[in-house]
Length: 423
Image (cartoon, rainbow, N blue to C red; front, top):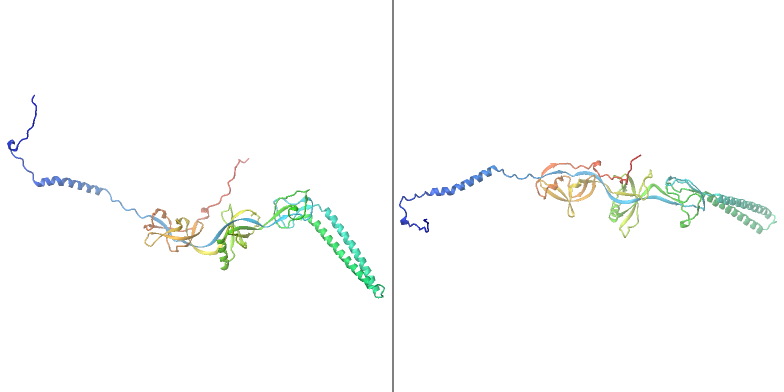
């Protein structure tokens, strides 16, 4: 078997004879280099021609409106409780046994209405005795006057001394005083008989009876006497509250400026609006140094006796009458740390933040005290879509309107604890 063990290089001189290879032109070499470049550039151009250009996003759209100009009444809020305008503890003025009760617990009573009857027989006997004393005193007076008359006729003939006449005159004066004292005892015993009928000293709602018929009651004052019942006068009724020193100073400044009497409106905890009307009646003569508050009182009419002492209520007090105010939706006001901000659209169509001073909310609209003018275009919707101020926006025209009554929150009544099927 033949195997190749070595390959020797061929020298140029020893190359086999034959024709020499032909050399290619230079442009052939350039074509091989340029052709791939042309193909790549053409592919990129074709790809760019087929892909559409990415358009810039449109500016965000916001709803703007000018602030609503409306006449408003501003109020200061307080909380407090109702109190009876007058409250009386009914106690007996004479001691004795209760023989009758003439009212229903919790009823409305009128002034002078009979409430309790006490046993009047002991006092009637004392009255008869006093009247007998009057008769005795009047008899003594008649005898003394008769003796004096005879003595005065005998003085002219000097049959009676002047000293005897003077003693008779003194006896007449003493008899007249005895008659007056006896008549006073009759009036006192008559009052005792009258006091056996305990009547209502004021009109109002009466509490329950503290004693029943058959019990002995004691007259007097304080712990030594017997409490029969209590009566609260409810028409008119008081509303007591505590106000801060700042609100007290505000009311004093308004009064010094010649402001009218401040009306008062109150709502109960289950009422959506302020239906009870009244007026400020009293402020205390000093502030409480511990709490820095001033005690005040309002008075209200209560013809139906619905308002009850101890009932809780929210009160608002007029803070200076009617004034013109700029109002925007409350949702248009945002908070930037300690500032209140409202976004407005400037002349160039860009968002601008405005720092404002706000007031109370009326039907969903916030009162703006400072920071806006009636011509400003306030963003009332869509501002949350814009991240930064200064962004150009598209404008949609809106309108500032107060919320309707159906859209305002309604306070519901307490939920019933349980229920059963009706039979």
